[in-house]
Image (cartoon, rainbow, N blue to C red; front, side, top):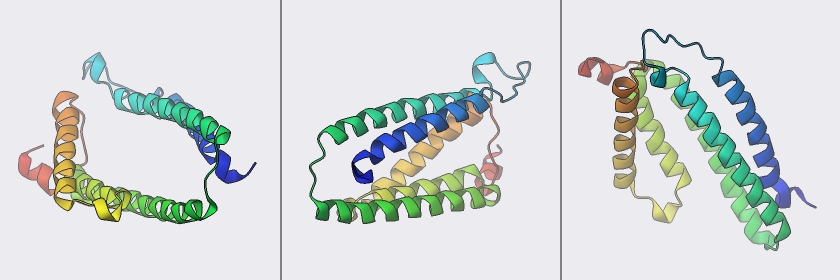
Length: 168
């Protein structure tokens, strides 16, 4: 059995192990219950993300098992798709590293807008790229997350020029 046939299964198992490690660490985040309500502790989002990652890992494992049972793809299609997938992964890691590096300077809002817009460009097929839609989605999602964290959960986010102008 080749690696190509079982890579989804391997990825799912590795990600499930990582999500377990992530959840263990998420539960160790110290909270200050006297300052925030119990539902708005610093653990809530990391735990939710860890659970979501575990669920998606299990789905990936199931899909990998199904793919192994029905693996009958042509070699040329697989090679062309593999090259595009590898480049998307490389660009995604580069954008994530850039996001981490610019967050302290630009703050949450600007860095998240830039990251989401670039990530959508990377993941969308060239013939289906709609830059206006990507910009609208990036703005709406960033605003939603900012309001949920800063106002709803009363959690601090990295400040930048926009947060300073808004008074957050």
